[in-house]
Image 1 (cartoon, rainbow, N blue to C red):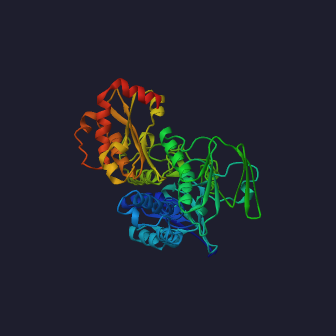
Image 2: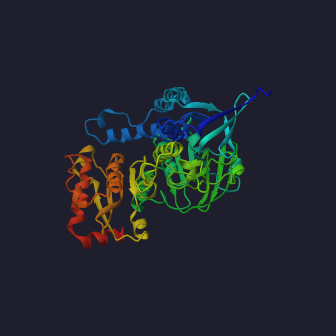
Image 3: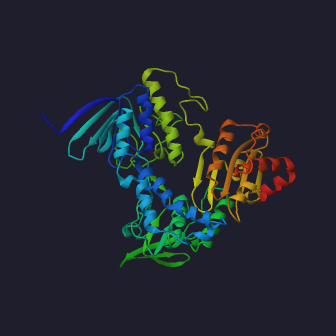
Length: 486
């Protein structure tokens, strides 16, 4: 008998113990299913240790310093730069020094079994796990397998780039020694946030983007972030192709259509790829390395037992959206296992309807960008009769009182036929907390006539909602003209 191999049978196997996998498993356990979660790295996943949390820990001190510097009575008493050692110490605390002990304890209290090792699908409802000690465990799922392995940094096919061993988000958020000059390939969220953080810490920064910054967001938001980065001393190269990369003598030589750039560190932030390359998907007729396409219950199309939740399905590559999907998927798995009818209609308990038109996102640059729903252009492309309403956040009393020289902008995109909001974007200091109201209005399809009765307290930044509604009702023709040209 081979004592180095064993077989176990459970109701559900979850591959990947990041926040998405944890939530799938938790909902399934609450639904009465015996669940095992498989993880080859740290329980808590990318977000906890190399993305959302450490990046925000790096960014927050600069936001606080900016606020203090713009507040008379405080600005006269503070230092004019950040303490790098203290910032990195706080970052380390945010990641629990890259220890997952507390996350493992949570799994135990939630009744979720943890199996450490590399899990691969080896047949229908079967996952084979290679343990760190060399043993093999074969898990047979009575009901379902959920893939929640997330995504990895995509390295574009640029001559010399892969061989140069550039940074990804992992190295950038776990930095120990500040580079003198950081070059960044990309113009998305990771690129702009890390450019903001590293510039605030004193590094020279060059951003090299093939297009504009923050593609897919309102152009005025991208423009505000670009201006702020340049004002902070960063170099921002837009519509610039990278032709080749060389790494020698601790120096990166980056040849671009805008000229040659040298830097001592290079961060690649050009998008994400699905972490499905080594999961054994070929054993069930799927292609390794591909995104997994699902229905709204997160069931992989063409199967009745395999679920893909979070980044791997490419529906919305955001932690909070993945956790939202996880709640729907975990409940759907439990319902199907117990023979309970599914609530599969739009906005039902077992579907991720919000993925399509109500995805909130915050970019923690300086200024922040908070957005949800459709941009004006996307709303028009969807065939909606759109009206766009803009308002200067600096004219809102709560914003103006929050700091000297507040600059920002709020936009509301309205489906004029139904008189409901379908998109909103806010740009400015500390606008992150504004997006939830917009999300609620979009999901609830709250008529503008009813929103008039949601009175914002004075003087708060939330008064932007009153100003947007007032502007919407003031002059239809002027608003339409403003929206079309913006």
